[in-house]
Every structure is written in C-alpha cells, then in structure tokens.
Image: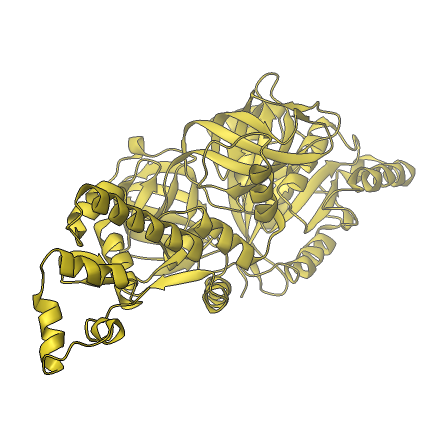
Amino acid sequence: MKKIILGTAGHIDHGKTSLVNKLTGVNTDRLEEEQRRGMTIDLGFASLTLPSGQNISIIDVPGHEKFVKNMVAGVTGIDLVMLVIAADEGVMPQTKEHLDILNLLDVKTGVIALTKKDLVDDEWLEMVIEDIESTLQGTTLAGSPIITVSSVTGEGIAQLLNTLDELTQKVQTKEALGLFRLPIDRVFSMAGHGTVVTGTIISGMIKKGDTLAIYPSGDTTRVKGIQVHNTSVEEASAGDRCALNLTGVEKSEIQRGDTIAPEGALTPIWLADALVYTVKGKGNLVHNQRVHVHIGTKEVLARVRVLGTEEITEGSKGYIQLRFEEPVVLLRKDRFIIRSYSPVVTIGGGWIIYHHTRNRKRFAPETMDALSIGEKGTVEELVSLILNSSEKPLSLNELWQTLNIERTELEKALQEEIATGKLIFLQDTQKYLSTNQYEKHYSKILAEFKNMYKKYPYRYQIDKEELKSRVFDWLDPKDFGALINDYIAHQRFLTDGNSLSELDGKALARILETKEVSLVEKAFLAWDINTGSIQQVSKELNLKTN
C-alpha cells in the first residue's frame, strides 16, 4: 500500500478544519487557543481510510496570512493537496498565496473542495467555479477536479472521498532506499516517554533502536519508539507521517525546522546555489535582497545574490545564491519558498542546484555554465562537473549525497565516465577523481622533482611525507596514499617504500651521477659484466628511457 500525505490549503474560515473533521472525525485544532478562537494557528494532523482501503495522513494548515510560515512547513513534502475554497466567498487573497506556494513547491496532484455549498444558490456556485478554473490556469493544479461539498449537510462528501481515492493512484512511491531525512514539524514531551518529535519522512527508512543525529547541531540520539497512524511499529520509511520517541536529548534542544538524519550524513551550510521562479505581481527579486527562506520545516533569513543579471523580474526565473544567516541542512533538488522581509509576502521559490558551493562570480561564464549543467545537465555531465571542481577524491556516498539522485543511476554514470577515460577510480580508498585533477596532481609532483633537481643536483628521490607536507597538506593521508599508489601502479614513479623517483632516462643518469651504483651493478652482473645498452639497463631497472 502506498504511503500518502494529503495537505490542506486555503483562505481563513473557508472550512478546512471542519471538512477534515467531517472526513475523519478528528478535530485537528489541538491547541486551546485554536479551539477558543475557532481559528487554526498551527499544523493539525489526522488519518483517513479511503473507500478502497488506502490509508492517508492529513496535515491541516492554517489559512490566516500571519501563519503562512506554518502553512509552508505543513505542505512541504505532501503528495497531494485539498485546496479548500468557500462557495460564499470564492477565491480570496490567501487562496491565491497558498496556490502560489503549491505551484512553487511543484505540487501537481490535488482536488478543489468547494465548501459551504448549502449557503449559496446554483447560479452563484457556477460563477464561483468559473472563477476558480480561471485562477488555476497556468499553475500545477490547472484542470484539477472541483467537488462541491457541505460539512454541515454532508452533501458531496462521498464524491470527495472517491475523488481522493482516484488521485492516490497518480501518486508516485517515494524512494525508501535513499538517505533517511525527517524535517521536524513538532516537538513535545510525553509523561513516561520523554522527548517526542513528529514529521514526514521525505526519504530513506528508520528502525527502532537506530542512532541518528539532529541537525544542524549534530547532537546524537537513539530512536526508542516509532508510531505511524498512532500505532507502534518497528520501522518506518519515506512517505510515512510518524512520531519518534527519542532518548539522549531534551525537548529544549530541538525545534521545528531541525532535521533528523544518520550521523555524519549532512553538513550544515551557509551558502547554496538555486534556481528561483518569481511570482507575477509581487515585484522583482533584486541583488542582495534580504528574504525569509522556507525549506523543509525550517524558516531562515538569507541574502539573495542574483547571478547573471542585475535582478530577476516578476513572473520569470533565474539563478541565485542564497547566503543564509544561520546554518541549514539541505540537499540538491530540495524545494524552497522565498518571502519578502517586510511586508512578508510570497515572492518566489524554486529548488537547490548545488548545496556544496563557493562564492561565485556573478557574471562569469563558468558560473553560468555550472548552473546550467546543474539545472538541466545529464547525470554524466553533473558527475564530471562535480569531480572536475574537486581536488579531493570523492566516494560514492559523497557523490550520492551531493547529487541526490538514485544510486543505481549514479553508479552507471560513474562506470561510463571511467570507460571513456574521464574518471580515475582509486582502488585503495574506493574513491573517484577526475582525470583532469589526476593529471594536475601529477604535474605538481613533477614540479617538485624539478625544483629538487635545481636545489639538490645529486638527489633523485623525494620522501613521501615531505611531498605530502609540501604539496598535499590539504589532502587526507589515506587519499594521498591512494593517489601515490595509483601513480606507482601505472608506472609513473618508482618507490623504495618511503620515497619516490621518476621513471625516465634521466633517473638512470642521476643514479650514476650520485654514485648509487648498486642498482646498476646488479644489472651488469646479470650480463656477466658485459655492458648493456641503455635500453637493457633501463629494462632491468624497470625504468623508461627518453
């Protein structure tokens, strides 16, 4: 059975919570203030079994403009949406803003629930439906079914349930084999249990007893218990709406916006490259503009660096860098929403191209080329770009987390790049290095030999540790060892274990010049003291000639 999350959306007082209550029997307004004011403030949760037996989780979001940040936290990661519009009012400001957010998050599957049907006549209802259809044009929800309902009389509820059942067939199953990530949307303490967090698993799987980390702090915790749909389970996976009972951490150490993932799997960052789409009618996005960024369940302030142009006009798209004001954890292809600093309105959104990046030159051709490949390049092009820009060898896991693509697809691309000579596989560490970087490192070593010959004419060897400290001090010792061993294996250098020497005719001359005759003597004795040719000597010494 599929694991499906349904999110609500819509203007305040259009009947979202009442409709969820009618569908599930659950009042999702759990806070005392919500019940007193009759207004949803924070996220509410329920589960629903459809006529087919398919079970879905429901996230009910607030409709008031003051709580849009809570709405974004709720709809991030949903599979389908129920956009609720009251028949007596029709499309309202928060209807449009919520629709903009859904469009920017690329939510493509949904139903329009036209509530309060019992309050209007058929002629008015027809006018409202026409306006809704017009509003949906050009969005990801264009053409979505519109079901008229009444939470008071129950009219249309059965049709709505059947429509939701049909829509679940369009939902694609999430990848359960990916990196486990759960953005936290709620944290509380429960008597006799301790700290509990809730959220939607966006990828991977988790088991009871797993040791994980809370990001961006990196604090470790152990999963004491897991609940899905209020039922204790041994494991949960992508698409599950779940509650985790954690040990080793206090409620005060966790907050909404934190992410739970395996230890060492995520690196907090301050800078990311992205593709952004701006909302028409909300103004241009200008360079160095301060904005609110909503990503996962996290809200963070950031500065926008516009790349390739002075500004991004409303209703268009462009490349940007987001410079966050506090560390965040995210991956390539994660979606986000941008809201202006003041007044706070939704002005754009998009997806992350590179989460491991550097401060880019705004108008440089290499900047635009890299971002273009990141947006629409093949997996092979992405792999080549990442490895060509990395002086350090990268493991399969590092590449997988950097690119956030299916593992089998990545492995296939790596093998193709190796077969065409674009990549080197370092056997000792099971890591990958671009051929360009491999040759650059080789040239650096040759330059060290050249400098040594000038300074010490009678030396022909370089100590490995000396080479490491002088040229590759930034490289992990294991990676350095793997690189040197690969050069030796491919007969680019000779080694006596601790030192390196070159493999050309000059090396033989230097052996003779420095009176290191033992190696040459070995060759001559093998020839009964008859002097061999330079080719014979080189062959015996496993040397190359010029």
